Length: 328
Ligand code: NAD
Ligand code: LMR
Image 1 (cartoon, rainbow, N blue to C red):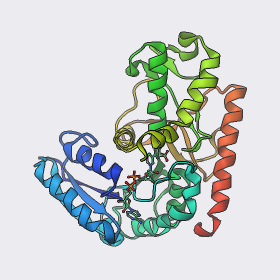
Image 2 (cartoon, helix red, strand yellow):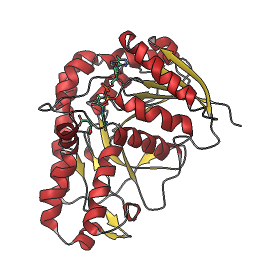
Image 3 (tube, helix red, strand yellow):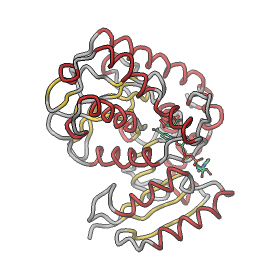
């Protein structure tokens, strides 16, 4: 057996936590031969509920679960962790945009960034899920300058999965046949799922579907507004599909990407495609199993370029709103 990986999950007693922890402990995230120790981080008032989640984890008798550490201390929670999955934060309610949460959630990520830098394993990787995830990740990363910038990620995989499902349904294809569907930019209503480069069974999705008005008038708003539609229907934000996307993101960043394909994750921009350096921006990314890289040379139509510029403008606006949380 390999030595266990230590995985911190913040907001572990919340909705996403309740779906996510069992997937990690069962081996879905790191594989059937990789033991894990779960560091479950919550705020003090949620510790009794977390105690119940811990009992349920124990009651699954997962062979790969080598330990559970529930805590309200960030220093204890992030001690020696290999992965930090930052979920804990307040979800939006109906009528809000995700960026309306910045005032409530932004501050959480200063202390978490600092605690990760003080305590985590030297190779730690951090995935931010709590909204608005791109800018929360920007805050955490800038409060942890010792942790290299290529270790910070914000989640847009849920948007990619939503986009893939819509295209598969429209094309009458299996979801596995839909590839190269990158979501660009912010996890917000300005996100841009680039249908021009998407493929179905290896052919351009636009040639298979042959319905440009559907892509622009139905597909785009459906994907961009899916989170809102779920909140309206459930009275709560997406949780099981979000947890599934966390599993997919970590797997995508720890396994080799299929030949010719790519996946979506927000990373610290290096200036690729003219996106301002330092913004947490979702790009098409490939991974060789340990190192990731932004895919270069993806052809963008004028329509795509305009959408990408709009989502970049929103991320700059969000960054400026939290400037006091970003140490100079
Ligand atoms: P939830 O309210 O059910 O759970 C959040 C948990 O976080 C609670 O248990 C709360 O006690 C805890 N928490 C709050 N502040 C904390 C802190 N400072 N430290 C540790 N824990 C803290 O919410 P949820 O449905 O699990 O959603 C969590 C976040 O994920 C929200 O911000 C939501 O908008 C976001 N989200 C993002 C995506 C995405 O695709 N990026 C998808 C779905 C949800
Ligand atoms: C989602 O996309 O489902 C989440 O970001 C939750 C939300 O607020 O929409």
